Image (cartoon, rainbow, N blue to C red; front, side, top):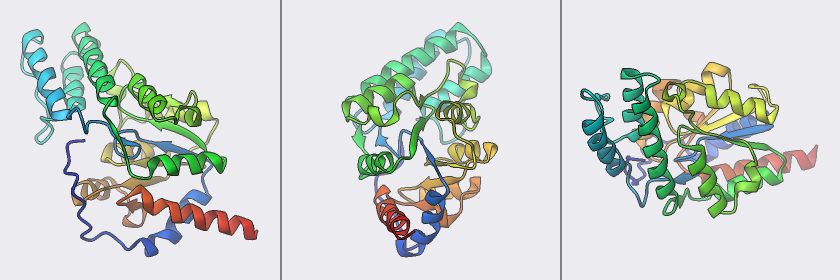
Length: 256
């Protein structure tokens, strides 16, 4: 994550107003798909993404014939750099090598990655409640597994870890990893819920008709989610806001 850790609650709806809408989202779901970096952990807290991108740019300058140009504002995003290289040199050994280097950096980052506050509790409660769980991410599957094993969460996801493929063009907003998750969990789009923190997450979910719940720690993250189609009533600033939602859902089911 390259965004500031400072939470700006300007224009964020009151959690009491959100709870009823969010209960409906979870009540309709049997499967929850988590993006990784953001909703589950802060992958690059101890090994910044900007430094990884800088190392990849140095490597690219030495090995790629021509500048790898990324979109404005994405110069510190290693995933954007990989995507740009893949568009310039599709299916090339250069791109495969860059992807492998990024995987190595992500594996290093998992050693110091910090859990997103209350994400582990949310995941454990969802698992205990019988939800199918999967990870759908543009990060490396190996990195996700490394982090989940370190934090004791791997059994809750099992085989349902769906990271980027060697072809970076299949990264979100392409829905490839979500499609794979639906297949391995035996879930339909309508009975699933995607929790993500980027416009790419929202667009990938929308493509398949998967309901979307946004996680935005500050307005810089909330704006792109709105632009991608996420509704304010389905965006939270913390994972902690979802715990009362599960309380309400469990209470409602006990009364049934």
